[in-house]
Length: 331
Ligand code: PBG
Image (tube, rainbow, N blue to C red; front, top):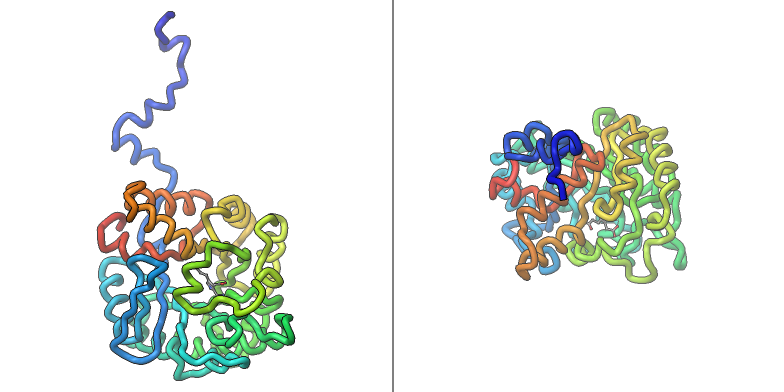
């Protein structure tokens, strides 16, 4: 066999992979802490931290301890958080969702008081942690009703805006909620409160650990009458365009890992920043695999987050940000 010569093998992609300096020079994707938003679960009361069994390394915090935790992360460069409430009281009317003294509005106030504009505070807007049946809207019989749920979500968004949230983030998947929330925020004088819409949110098994963390699993049925069917692609673009028309400031695809095609196509069509949600099941898969010694945790994490960026996400909501900053994996 003749050895390959430069005449018969001019194309040698390996030339650009020869050493770290070359690889750095030609890397196409950047992953920095500024791209990440750390998710947090908020408990009522004070002095409370509870480890979440289904999400290794993640805890629920009461507002005071959350301020401490977020302060450490902020000092290391994690500049944005997404908050989820873990209320004790639940009822059919989701009254906890609109309580200005609820755990989340109080946590938003505490974070804003401590860190002001140095920290971006995003808040999940959904009824599922606050309803006694665990659905994301009100139910009549076994039907999750749309318009009455939207009205309550808009009230919730106003309470969070009043507390100082930078972004309200409807994750309920009711029709028309972005437009109604925008109108109600504006009418109440919160023109500068932005909306991050969970635009293409799929009915996914990857939310399992979150529902344990937030105590928000549906008591009957499933979420398939409002969250999207994982088999659908075109429908994600329809949801994207509706949310853009209704005034979304940023849009989201969720989950991320099994939906990189959706992220890429939403990124190609969106004229606002695209956020991907690296959800609880994706997080816990990596953590459990690492704990079992199946693969290297740092490399898996950076590969996952890097792939989501490569697909086209501007920002990533993730539970890995705090550790990635603390251990110096990225800066
Ligand atoms: C609330 C909500 C959920 C998640 C974010 N907001 C759960 C769900 O829809 O059941 C999941 C996030 C995660 O898995 O990390 N509706």
